[in-house]
Each structure stands twice: as C-alpha cells, then as structure tokens.
Length: 457
Image 1 (cartoon, rainbow, N blue to C red):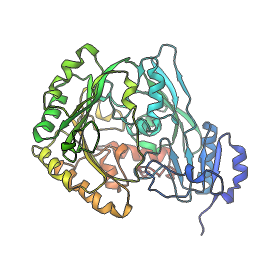
Image 2: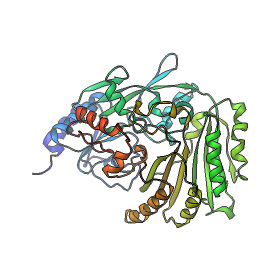
Image 3: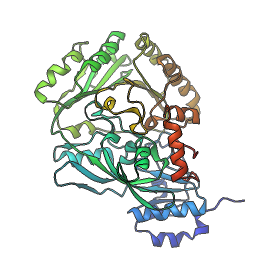
C-alpha cells in the first residue's frame, strides 16, 4: 500500500483554507523552506506550512492525522536529530508566529513560539525584563521551553520551565487546550521537560524578572587540569546569582588569542552574574586568579548582549550529554588528553555547574527530573561529512564514558538521534512511566513522534 500524500487531500484546497503560507515541492523557495539549522539533513517534505495562527496549526495537525502523514514541528529548527523536517511528510513551521504581549505590571509575557530566544530577550530587555532561556540566540522558544531550558540564569531563576506559567497546546485531535497548574495540570507537568510529545505548543506565558544589567561575557583561560578543577570549584562556591558555562576546546586562530596559543587547550568561560553590578568584580575575582587570561571580555552589560554575535549553521553534530554530581578526579586530564585526538572541525567538552534555584524545585515537580545533580556535561563534535559520523561519535562517547556517562541520564534538549534506552534515561525514576501514561491519554496514536519519542503506554 502506497503512503498517502497531500495530493490525496487536495493540496490546493488546503492552501485556500490557511491564513499562512503552504510551500510544496513545485513552489519557489521550497529548498530554502526545507532547510534546517543542521543543514546536512537533505529531506524533502511534501509541504512546509508557515502557519499564521492556532487555526492553521489545528488544521494541519488534523490533515496529518487523517491522512496518516508524518508530521514535523519546527520552532527554531535546531534539532541535531533533524526532527524539524521530514522525508515525504508535512512540516509545521512556527517561525511566523512571533506575537509577544507583556502584561501591565511586567511580571509575565504571553509569547508565540515562533520567536527565537534572542528575539524574545531583545524585546523584553528593552524594559529591563528577562526570562532565563538557553545560551544561543537563534534557538526557537518552543524547543528550549519544552526541553527544560538550561541557560544563563539557571542558578538564579531556575530552568525556563520553572518560569512557565501557562501554555496553549494544539493536541493530536486538533483541539486547542490552555494548560497550567490549575487547568489540565497533568499536561502542564508533561510539557515541562517532555519535549514535543504531547502537542504543538503555540504560545507560552513566561514569568519575567527585573534585570536591567549584569556582569557577563567571555573569560578565556589556558586549560590545565588545575584551571578546569579550579573553575568548577569557584562556580560551585559562587553566589547563585552567577551562572557559568565552561567550554574546554582547542584554541581556534582568533585574533584575540595569542598566535602561540592557537591549537592549545583553552577554557572559554561564559559568565553571567545577575546580582548587584558593584559586586561583580569580587564575585569573578576567583576565576580571573586561576591563570593569566588570554582574553577577558567580562564587563557590565545589558543582559541581551549575551546573545549577540555571529552564529554559524552546522551540517552534522555528534554529542553525548549527562548529569552528574561532580567531575571524576581524573576528568580534567582525560579531557585534555582527548581533545588532541579529535578530528572534527570543532570539538569541545562543556561543563555547567548547577545548583541554586534549579535545585530548590522537587525532582518530581516537572518532567525535567535532574534537579539534584550538581553538574551538566556535554561532549560535542561538529563536522561536514556524514560519512565521518562513526569516527566522531566514537570520540564523543569515549570522552563521555571516562567522564561518567555510563548509567547517567541526559538532557533531551541536547540529544541527537538516540535509541529508546538513552531517551528513557533522560527521564529517571517514575518520570518515564508517568510520561508514557500521559502520552497514551493525549496522543495514543503517536502522531507527535518526530522528537525524542515517548511511546504511548
């Protein structure tokens, strides 16, 4: 039996029903419309629908369900597994749904999920208001929110999902549901970390915090075992107003890094101190004392400036991430010994000290259930040729295994194309079973399966 196509559903009729734009294989701009951030995914959906509103979303969801079509949902298209596109299916592209409404007292904002993290932060930042999202400006608001959201304010204000007040969701039956702690609370629990398994989240109500200025930016240090260990210890001892990201990699030939350091191990510390600006120098002093910096770009700034700067789309990525209590004693040496063996165009080990606000929420309060872990580790390699995947994936897994990946669960926001056991480990304890039960209630036919999939119970 041949798979159904949109021809069976009369594509011109569907186009006429939509307020947004439907692009199929014969339309100008099709190749551009089907491209995602990891542009090595050369997939050809039968149509991409740039939806304009929830009615468009509901109609396309119903068409996919009734026609048996594979359905992909795209917010910022950053899925390293290529979940934002489909071979022969239909894509809901949310990128034109960019509405944002800040309430009168500035405590919350309703925002559509076609906005990127950078766009949202720029708009709210004009009023000195902030919601903690991820660390990359071009990531879609929908994806980062549903995964959990580990960003620059994680220690002060928690995850993005800890600042989610309510959400509008188009479910598998094509119905629009508003969910919160008091309305459809089970669905609200599930979408806070459960990814796109339960419907298309078209808008979210996010809590806003008054932060007009921070002390932030990049601090680039020579990477030695002592510097890596010292950085993590200083980050753990710092007040919760400071969140850090330590990227250990080999120095690229950048103009602000001395030539004799090019190719040597460096630690790129992304710093975000969201406390009183006058205390920033004292809080950051232990990090600057670890070694003479190659570059020190940390300064008082407006929070949205953290998202400024060029971003380059990648073709392919291999990664392994996990939560841990701490780095093994020999972990820094293993990182520094492993980096020179990497052959990808970019390889790095990322270390994020957690704690603070994220740890004050019970593990079972949301589908993100790693709140009691003190460290997040992400090993990644970016490359241009898919034929090299096995080589780079082996390097990633070797490093991650030494650092403690075995038996640890990861973060779905950073997972690539993984098997069920890896996805299951991302939802420890009873979280997985509860998610499967709710998947069976809200999406029993698994229409929303192009994601890190949770099969219906």
